[in-house]
Length: 333
Image 1 (tube, one colour):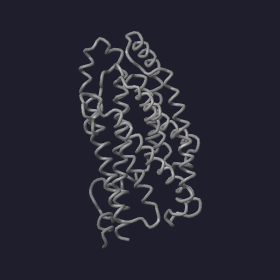
Image 2 (image 1 turned 45 degrees about the vertical axis):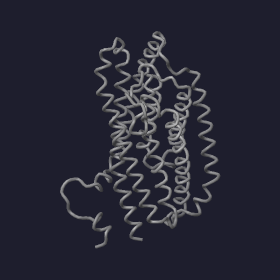
Image 3 (image 1 turned 120 degrees about the vertical axis):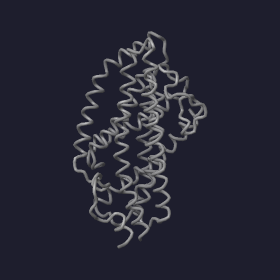
Image 4 (image 1 turned 180 degrees about the horizontal axis):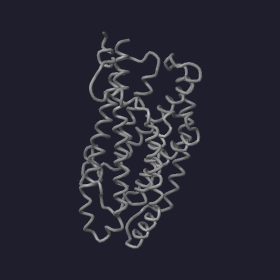
């Protein structure tokens, strides 16, 4: 029995295995129900957003202006143009060089997805470097990610940080996630078979960005964005390279290591540690005179992040099973 069969072969075991968790047939139903629940909850919160914005204005707290939306529209244009240029430069090469197991229409669809991953590598690399360069000295930038003066994820809440670049960074990031959601809504299962899974994921990202900007929780938002962006660099790179014809086994092993390390460190350590900090700090804000105004905003942010963390756990189980299988299959070749 070879190494693949020893590690991943079928054998009787007690309890639930990774394979059984991955092959559970009702995830899409769960994601669909979760999406509609989150959507209804966020619609319900809109009136509360209006009250909160009035509170910020009345008490002269800093906040994003409606004029900052110009960066959202500029970002949407730049993101769309960037993806079109990326496709023009790389699609033909990818179509010629992906694994020969993909043929016909499947080959075309896979080439499009790999080309998208090329864009993701470039975009998330730029966004991660930009976030670190602009914010690493802020008191709310996590020390686990290189922050030098970290004190609390809340920063000066309910004020937003005094940074002229924060609105630009935030709106461009919003543009990236809104563009991804729009593409998924327009093309549906033509671009992603796990439709409701990715609808929920993109929606959570958009809702978190929207409500964090409306509720002045932008320090939380930057933390969510950068913990995702760092691991997405290696995830997209690993996915793309794994489907290239004649990929080298030692490079696959290195990429699998970086994918799993960056994912586990940022999404399963840094991200939940900041959720716990948010929960731990809530009693402090309960003593403040404006608690009745900010209570819903903070609790909604925590809930959405917990739901996103649950998706991280699901993806981690799937990733560990898939990545290890691919790695050992490559070594055997």
